[in-house]
Image 1 (cartoon, rainbow, N blue to C red):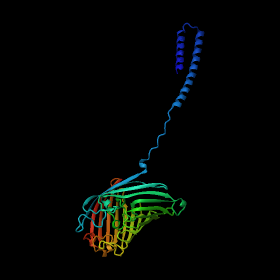
Image 2 (image 1 turned 90 degrees about the vertical axis):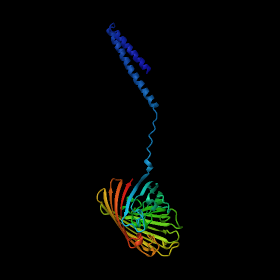
Image 3 (image 1 turned 60 degrees about the vertical axis):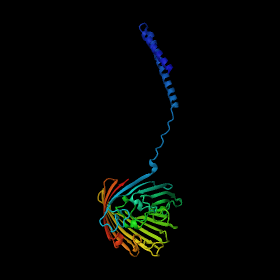
Length: 430
């Protein structure tokens, strides 16, 4: 660049002297001077072009290498989260005699005339979806409901329960690949998980009514701890479950035997689904009586607005232990069963109404007995429930409920054969 500047200055000097001497130069000298200027201009242009190419090449060699931007990390590593809060008020118009603040034959909404935080649940996990993938899930339940479904089976009233905690893995079954009957993979779940039995669930937002059915509280388990497998058969027409666990609501088994579970679901018609579950095992710690449970669930979406459900449960306990007969079993067999029919109509996007009719029959009062002597009775309880639901927002749900209970045994409801309750509920769903 210094040579270029020197050449340029020389050219300027030549031009200056040329113009200064124009008055005394003759015409030939002027022509000669112009010719020299033209030659110098061409040489200057060539030199400038050459120097530009050299500088461009030098800059290209000296340019720093820029590393590619790192790929963004996935949010939460694919972990999903959710939960809900359930706040309720309940009032019993016929308070059971001799009992303060308690609704009979209830399991969650037991507190009469009180505001309660029934549940505050948070869950997080990552679901395994494809063969070779692993996942997990953890559900933590707090509030009044936590004491009811306590899988530890303890008398601790801390009102915090580890409702679910399991790991899962989808194992490929390459030797069945291409089969239209057998599965090409199986999901294996190990830990604590909710039961397959029955229609209703622990999570309030997933039920149609505020209160749970009698069978949900007295006829079926809540959670199990063990190993469960899930796979499809006949091109996934049947959704099948097989497992073994510690029994009904037990973290640690109370005896040397395990409980077997088997369930399958299918859709025989459009908008119609059926699900059947079976449990078989020893559930009484002090004897070897076998307990059997069979539950059947039907759901049918008749229209976009109208849906119905039906639930039939049957249970049997051998060599039963009753409140009147403590210690060893009496050698007798107790049976219990329930029929329940549900209907729900979605009037608008925000407003819906639901109804439930149920009959719970407890042979020998094995499941609902609260006083000695009930073993000779077969208790029948009929209940009718009406629930209205309105969504204030997509997350905030309000409900109101009227329920009527009627029994053939006064003792089963604290000295009264019937009770009428009303309730209100507010749910926030995350």
